[in-house]
Image (cartoon, rainbow, N blue to C red; front, side):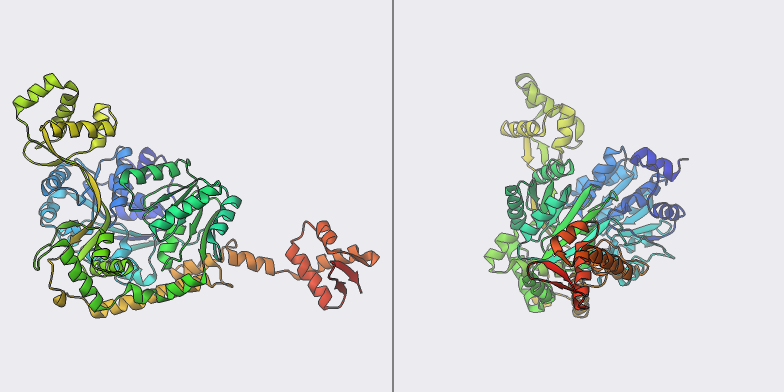
Length: 634
């Protein structure tokens, strides 16, 4: 039997584990429930993927992020490990086919959302799946006291009643002690082995600057610090604007946000990963699942509303262990805006009911219907039609999501669906008349069972590989087949989606837990206050402040953040003062001289320290510094 180290080497090409990965894997293999807190870039996925490869059966991975599931499945597939994920674009028949394959042992990893766990179809297959391990990614989502609470996460523990002997591992990069305890409680982790890796990042220099011109400061930093960079900002328009301004200063930059088509997002991301683009300016839609170790700077153009998200995003810098920088740029107006955020993020119950009603009207959903259904949702049209503010709508969608009424996904990829409509006789004629199209027809028939009876999701990428064509050529030939009446075609699309998790209720009878809502608002305000405190630090190390926030009380001052560096500059020892005083006396043997010449002679000493000693000597009436920069000995 293989060992964890052999699996790591065979599939990941790593010689050894990092941090406490080996201990976590050992606990999982002993079938213990585990809570693993690993900082961003700490290698969380290896902690469940490696042991699952040594266990008999399928590993069920629960994640709230479609993009992250997709990336992990692709990464595993590229390593030769069988993995699949269930997403909203699949029909019931297709979900059933995937689950049948999982039962048959085709896949080692099954990725799905917490909402999918609750469907009757999944429940019907659950016992047959031969599950060896349950991995809960982004586990902080289970705590309503955390910064990213998801109601369906509360019901994950129900799976343990049916899979009693199956161990569970919960993983997160950012959870305070309160949230850590809540994860253990809500997921019903039994005698959990808890692993907390230090939140210190010895190579990451944190800094925060209050500036008048962020773009000028960003350009200055990028010119002083070579290498790859991420710049986070809040709005999509801002990403394009900043990327253009940096390009004008001969800094290779591009922009990225969730509103771009999948193909364009992939292209931009790949160009940045391959260092064809130096700077990616993006919203927080960027970064999850990206393993680029050589990011030298991560800059924030807007103040995040909590240290959890800031730490996670900033932590994408310097994963290779080399010196890197996390920079936060802000102005006083933003500080005032952040102070107002608790009231904006937690609207009144009347406003929630108003938007809930408007949403039902917009989507045309009668009372008592909608549960489990997906609806295309264009937020810009919605706010325009109902004369609402975008920020208010986003906050209320978040509240409705936390209360378990609906789920809002900014990007859901709905794949191309095909069904044959022509008879076999017509297909024989096509073979003679259009041999190039016949090749595509045969590929469809051989690859996708049941395509004659119902719409089946297809992958243009997979077909392009088999046919040795480009994806564009495959798409063109599918359109030709549709024009000849050979197939019925529903092209792929990417659109924001609303999924109703419960049937639509009358707005006046909408159930909201007022007490929990008020407590979430209180805790949110605490997180905002901590973020504001981080900005105003002048004495405590920034890295230590963050580590303390996450319960890492052993953290030491980093020595490289802006606060630590300023303290070093200010701190001049008695020995330093004595040595510089002696140098000044030697220089002033003739009675006078210039400050400029003295500084040149003492180039090996910090200018700040020399000035500090000169000021001290002048205060002690031992020298006089004139307006002309001349020093005279008294």
